[in-house]
Amino acid sequence: MIYQIMLPGKVRFGVGSLDTIGDEANKLAAKHALIVTDPGVYQAGIADSVKERLSKAELSVDIFSEAEPEPTFPRLNAAAEQFGKEGYDLLVGVGGGSSMDTAKGLSVLLAHGGKGQDYGGVDKVPGPGIPIFTLPTTAGTGSEVTNIAIFGDPSKGRKLGLVSRHLLARLALVDPTLTYGCPSKVTAASGIDALIHAIECYTGTKANTFSDALALEAMRLIAGSLRTAVKNGSDKEARNRMSEGALMAGIAFGNSGVAAVHALAYPLGSRFHVPHGVANGLLLAYVTECNLPANLPKYATVAQMLGVKTQGLSLQEAAEKGVEAMKALAKDIGIPLHLRELGVPREALEEMAVTTMEVTRLLANNPKELTLDDVRRIWQNAW
Image 1 (cartoon, rainbow, N blue to C red):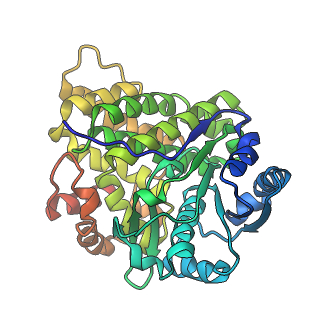
Image 2: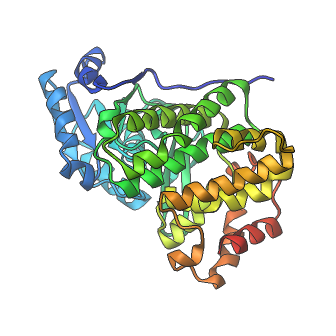
């Protein structure tokens, strides 16, 4: 099997690693940095902490604190127009996936011009953008190490991915201390999202031995720590393990992709504004249930990683227990298990099923080739 691995220029993990950011900026000879973050992270003082370290390294630093929770092309384009003449030579995405994706999008637009929509799809970015550092404040999205940025397109009622090697960060700096104050609901949503990254890339058609190894360890770390991190956010060991697990899952799916869970989550997020991690967490068990026949051995292994005692069980029994474990985990951390709990009307399911089938990039990686009827059934079961 031939596979390739794409990684950021450098990945640094560990408690206290934030203190090295100034030195890393100096190595790039950066002089003028823009920190991209969201209002919550800004109000928590995290962006100012990053600014302080960059300023000590003699950089001029500005902060853009209006990254959207679910970023859209109109807001990205407006930000690019706002900052187009500032001459930044370093962008620092600080926050969850939304802030880091916004930094990636700005990197492209400030370097190449145009609108975000111009670069939607695979390999549409013509060359390197402004250098990016990514600093996650949640243990979840994996955006710090991927070559993907996702934006909503309100005019078309869908989300669209920018996929290019030029979106990879020069430095992915993962300091678990940045997640210590993360609210429990965000911890739950981002954490189950990270777990799904590992599960989907492990069971997907593009899986390889490199991504499998990382995905398995990511599942073990996350499944063993997520409940504790949600219920006791002051547990530093749980936080550290979640950060490392999310990082591994990010590298894994960044090189072997996600699949139908994410494909279904797209229309749920774009039409009903359900947070990405919540949408994925709700859909996981229902999509997996449909997928089981396509790869029972791997789904049985997933069950083991989720803590299921599989000794003496058939592959079918073990895999089915894994689905039960997914539902139990979601319930324990406060992720709803039915669409009706989120106010999604039943009459919306058909349109979402049709829209799901348009997410061909992700569906192509699903272990089972899904028909429209399969997708309809998943949506009905989830309702």
